[in-house]
Length: 183
Picture (cartoon, rainbow, N blue to C red):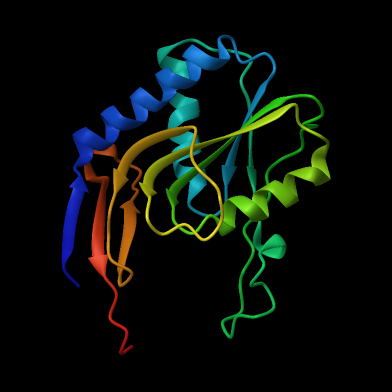
């Protein structure tokens, strides 16, 4: 599989820092905001943003969690492949709070639709925003658009956008690969 890198490790780091700064501009001290990493892949981006906000900008009262949307997906019972849920690490009430969903790639919008349904289990938010690292803008199946986006890309239907996350930031990057339909 050929990988075409769209963000190298330095570009990825700068993009995430820029997204964190945009959140600060909008949410100030985060006293009425909860960051929600969408499982499975949004947790990595959420963790990076939380670290930047806490350690680089000294935001102490940050509330965040991880939300699994597996059982809220509209294809949950339609897939031949059995979906494995991730752990929901979210014990917060969202009642009258500003929620920021965080995910790595916005593709069809179905993950976000599932998250909108899942978050209702935790209360009724005041508002919900969407932060995305990579926006595949011409692939949407639902009318969902990001409020914050790191990079917008145009790719073919047989291509996939992936982020390589690691414990060591130097080895992280975003890339496009072509899917082999014969597998």
